Length: 298
Ligand code: SF4
Ligand code: SF4
Image (cartoon, rainbow, N blue to C red; front, top):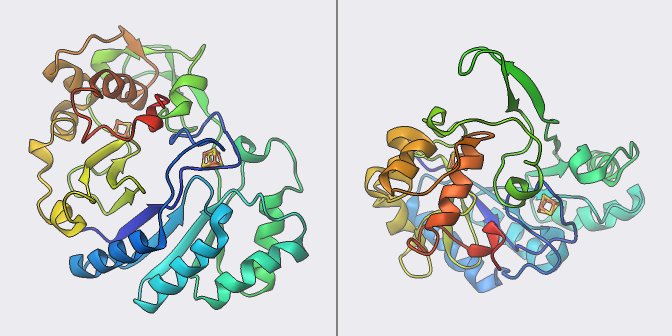
């Protein structure tokens, strides 16, 4: 049952992280308008089971007035609300309070701050710490999100003694291009399931300003500007989906098999392979593998 919807409020971000699975940058196109947000909130009320909405990006604080109105509207409709941010705006704790107080007063339920070396390097007293502290000081709920550093571990089960990549960022979007060099691979046939997403019974989806309804970054169940979001959700048939069906039947390996896609002999993990196969199928299934910019194509 769908309980959460994450708005990719904008693909634009003032950062351009190597690990970004949405390939965001200051040049990225695509930002929700307030009327689009209102339309989506109405659809969420129709679906009935959704209780939480999160606004993220890209960097949602780049559109602070829009963000504020989104929180106010969602809160008035009875949704719990969250925001994920890279905290670039927290120049000092005192300044951070200026950005946060209006959000608190609009009813924001939770602020999530990205605090890890991928976003802030080795800087200890970083903007995430300042944002966290300012939020606590003015009585807001705040949480730190930390992406663990990847590890290369000995793999005893799949290929005896061979090292594998575990932890770390999902190898999707820019991460699949920038973070994979030199990492150890495993035979492609080993990737027989999707390790991270509940593709059959999704509890949350990400939606973007182009209308895509993502189950995973760049993997959509359809376009909500063409078919109502409530219809897309209520009529979702995972087994009939040309990408999700094969992933459920046998992971990235099955996806390549069913579409007879040319593939490498080895991949670093299931997401690395899945991204490569999606990239090769993007022109065949533009409705489901979208938008192209998440694959670094525009
Ligand atoms: S990972 Fe986050 S902060 Fe970094 S470019 Fe992507 S959206 Fe921006
Ligand atoms: S296997 Fe594919 S669908 Fe599953 S989490 Fe990885 S990239 Fe996403």
